[in-house]
Each structure stands twice: as structure tokens, then as C-alpha cells.
Length: 66
Image 1 (cartoon, one colour):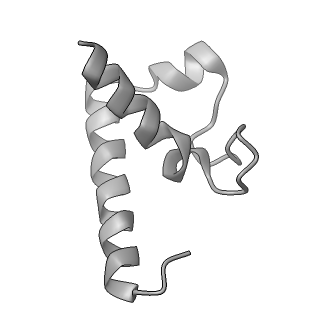
Image 2 (cartoon, rainbow, N blue to C red):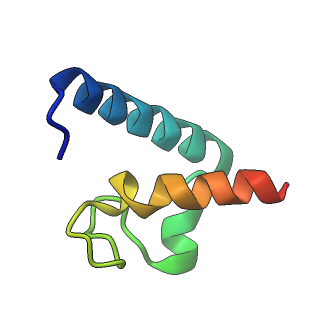
């Protein structure tokens, strides 16, 4: 996905941090509420895992709404 290995590593680390923050704040509530599994393919059809595709976008949008 990324040509630069350093950028890929940074994106992976950022995703892990977001996932950790999300889990601390919401627990496993997302999976219970929506039935989405963070490791399942993203429903947008990109072929990426949900946690690496749309989850960060949704968390950022939720943060902006607050």
C-alpha cells in the first residue's frame, strides 16, 4: 500500500494507537452494537481490515462532532 516502509510502519503504529484508545473508551461496544469485527474485511469494499480502513475515519468524525 505504501512505497515507503517507514510510512507503512507509522501508519500501522497509528492504527494500533487508535485501536487502543478506542478500546479503552468504548470497550468492545462497537462489535456488540454493529456486529462489525475489527479484523473482518471493511464493509466499504476496499479489501482492507475494518480497523485499518474505515474505523480511524469514523473515530475522527465522532471526535469532531463532540
